[in-house]
Image 1 (cartoon, rainbow, N blue to C red):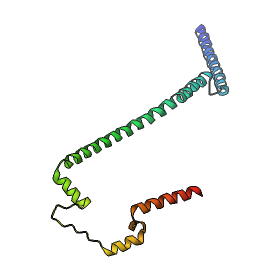
Image 2: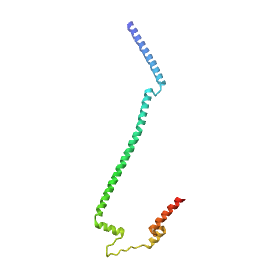
Image 3: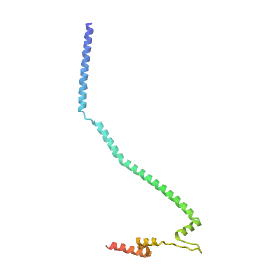
Image 4: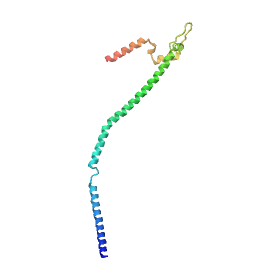
Length: 158
């Protein structure tokens, strides 16, 4: 039994010695880690590669987004143009109808059929108001044209 006791005591001592050694190793590792910089060489290289990728991809991504916006604008314009073409086709079809053309001529050009009489009623208050607003509307068009040319010429000479 004495041999057994020695063996246990040696085992106990070895266990205690192992725990002490483990504690010292743990303390030295934690001290090394405390002194170790947080950014290692690998991390710095990885960060540099990521930054390079971001910078390298920034311009193409901006171009991509810009082109997508251009495509959307072109599609919108094409859609508007198609709608306008449809409106013009409808107008062309209406202009093929003689009754529609006659109605337009009567409304806009004040045309009348032979034997009909056309009357234009002028509101005197409206005429007075218009002459106060614009003196140039009562003059012939060519007078306004020459006045515009003269005014443009005067501004050039000054």
